[in-house]
Image 1 (cartoon, rainbow, N blue to C red):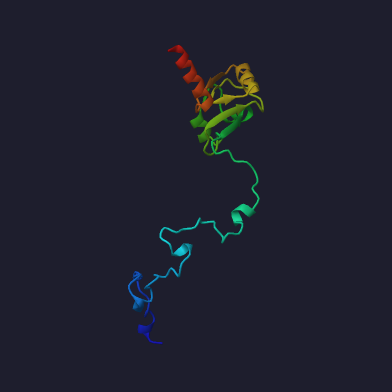
Image 2 (image 1 turned 30 degrees about the horizontal axis):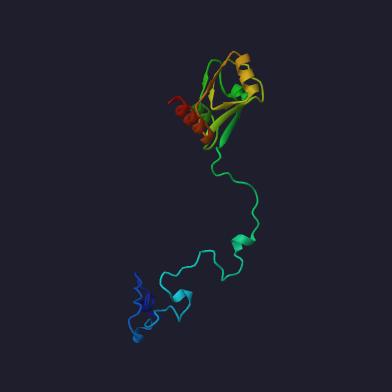
Length: 167
């Protein structure tokens, strides 16, 4: 082996294949498309999952579970967790809960549930509250603040009906 031979035949940029430039090019006449058939026609393309007319793999595999792509993701925090993480008189907001790692990840709505006991007076802000959570927060002398969440399609339709009746 000679040092010159190591990189012989290796090119940085591959040369473009010039199609339909005569029989001497090796890619003349049919331009590498073969004779007749779907692939020889202009604009021909198959669906990415097409497998020669047989049942595609994507249709053979069973589908399981449920996925609601428009559903809202709801983060859940219990009253007992809030009691442990906060001191009396503090204000519980979405930002503070995220900073204290109680409301993790990305979510659309925050719901406070009534699991555990609340012994401190707190002002709790969230999108939703369970009945038991509201009772426990108010029993401890705290305050419940319901934040406006994303409006649903049904709510928007109700508002439109009200506006149309008013005018």
